[in-house]
Image 1: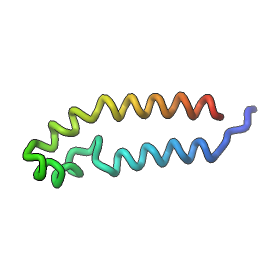
Image 2: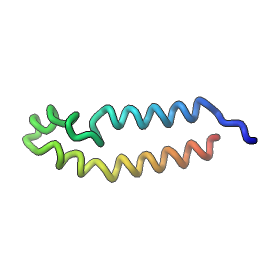
Image 3: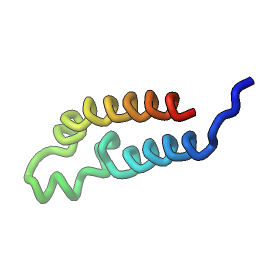
Image 4: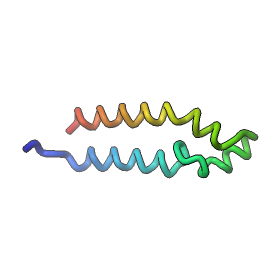
Length: 67
């Protein structure tokens, strides 16, 4: 069985938690930003969804290489 580097796995988990908690996926965390920008929170979340998912995929690939 291959050894897994826990630091790489922890970094990937932290990236996911920061993005979800920061409001890039969860629309209700965008209410303050949407109020300042005078737009709908759902619209901001919809526009950020693809870049966030691509970031997850890229980070997962890099984590697999580093492990």
